[in-house]
Length: 452
Image (cartoon, rainbow, N blue to C red):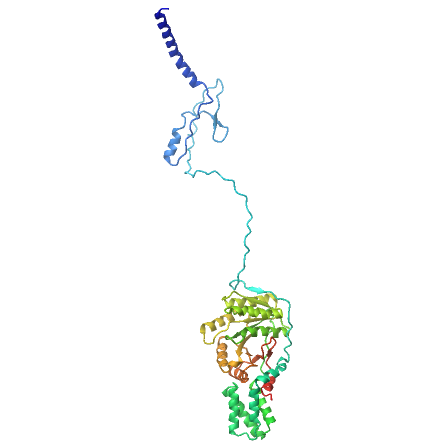
């Protein structure tokens, strides 16, 4: 075949291809394709620039869409023969509100199942006003104290033994054939050395000398009886020595026990509880001596023997708070008497004495204190009078408890205390036993002093 024909065929093929390719491309553009990639959605950003970027990516004429799912519009084909819809004259598209940037949400992990955690037990701490105090519940009575009636008479032999030198010395002087001036001076010295006191001794000896002179007697037995009468008169036998331990209405009687360190105050509180229980009273003890670690334990031991409750506070706590709670507990339980043990104090320490006054004032918010008992060590002699005087200025002392009277004490201190202070001695300690605290009986005491 000639070459010209080949050239002509190639030209025709090239011309046909040039005419077909644009048509194929047009058809390909207009034909729907399932694999056509979806246009990228704009990412919202904060600020005006972000809003403009979103608007710029919108198509000029958005087709009518109907929501078929969250955030995915689907094209709806117009009906055949329908006229193209005019552009709506409604308000422009609502402004796109762009939220402030939020942190990229993390993939939520499944929440762990709740695990039951046992909470620690709540411990109530003491208090008045501060924190509630610890109350040792009343237990069964382990001991039944001996009756107090006639208790001092039963202990007379023990008292007479301790005062034997004093009694024998006086009786030996009175038994002399002739009572001259020198003898009377020796009697005065004996009474003064027995802690009776100078003023009280002078009065007793002057009255005894006058009676002996008027009656003209020199008999030792009669002189002994005269001396006994004078000593009994100095002790004021008509004074009220009973303990005010009877409740008033719905409020128990309150006994406040005070004294200096080493006077046997806490032990005396335990013995007072036994005295009251023996007389048929129900008792509650308040351990307001929070400065001595063993005081509350010691008081609890005494209370457990007679089935009494003890209200105590934290070590070094506020004594006034413990005393207040003890009285409140006594009102709640309906006991007859509340006995409050206070911390030992030195009478020359102003701060400590002021604190004792605070304890009394706080307790009196429940009502007046019925008894304030001052515990004195009988072996201190005349030094105890200064202690007693200062205590009476801080609190209204209504009675004295003399401890250790069966030891080396000199019995005349009983007379000196009553005469100097005008306060009756209500109880005396005549031994270390639990029932060796006895209500004071002046006649029995004088007889024991002058026992032969």
